[in-house]
Length: 450
Image (cartoon, rainbow, N blue to C red; front, top):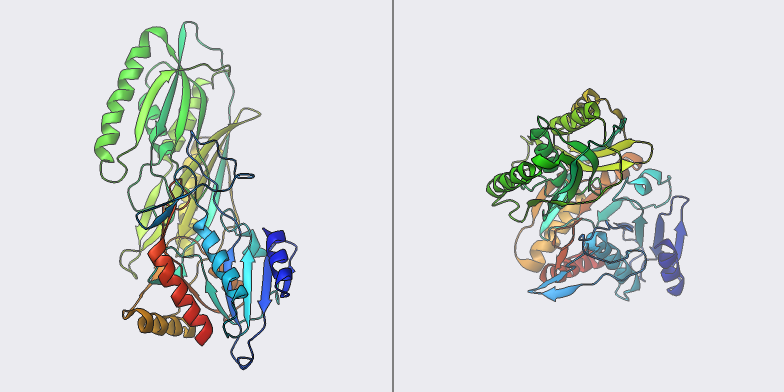
């Protein structure tokens, strides 16, 4: 991406530079007669979340994203679309190519927003000079965001010993699949099933019976709600039918509980093969119990902004690794710094009780709203002029890089806008084309008339 952006700038004879982290800034000088317009920074991130359905053979490193246009939406059916934040990158490139008169632009393209915000964290003083920034990474057209949650990841590593496989065992694979998944910030309050959590919930209810854990795996990115998870277990031959019956009974529970929030979630059981040695019984009980105790979902709603999630946590993934270890990744968010650390410690406490080694990432700060923002007034006035209606001014529970920008560039005046996206961070991600057209008109008007 960095090479592509630098080549793009070179083709247009525009100034461009790249820092050690991989961030790129491309500078477009002011048009004649617009030299006195303050520099405007437009910002998007270069990376995307690469998720696909279990049956997809898509290779994100080599294959173009397959998409369709249906009912006014651009949709990737089996993969993520990458509109988060490819559409922000595209908007910047279109403005850099434009021959319309405008003031000086600095287009900033950061790296690793979806994983750790390393790009924003690594920005050095002077990498850009503008005092006004528009972040192009929001997902609801007509909603202007002026604040966001901070966040951090918490990782647990369970060590375990193995035991011999019981004679006369039948190997079964229990799979939870078909969940909607989605963004762990935007969709955390929509009562979607977390496949890892529901798998662990089922296994916990079965701890009273005589079975052995051979393998457990599920989830993906820290900022995505887990859609799929599976465990391979060994069950005494004469108890296999009972286990299958328990799975069928649990399916009815899931269908009832998630009939509105996530109606496609399923749990199934089938015969399988596995050459791994079983996890020792004591370790199985501790690990499954700790994971079931680990919180997931909304922890608190904001009392300042009605309807805004203040604090949440996401039980993102569980994977078996070499060296007889099981790695669990969770992700916490909050617009209140003390609450962010409190929910991370609560997750830590549950996992420590299961015997895990627990570490926390450095995290990223939240972005405190500024209702007296000059760029907010400009954007609101432009939107009302173009479309005859006031936009909504909101804060968002998802993480944006704006908090890190403000920490590094105090006094920076910022707003976050974008077209309407749905299902980001999950297969089926889609972009509403009508909202894109409005977004284009709006950002054009703001840039050309600032």
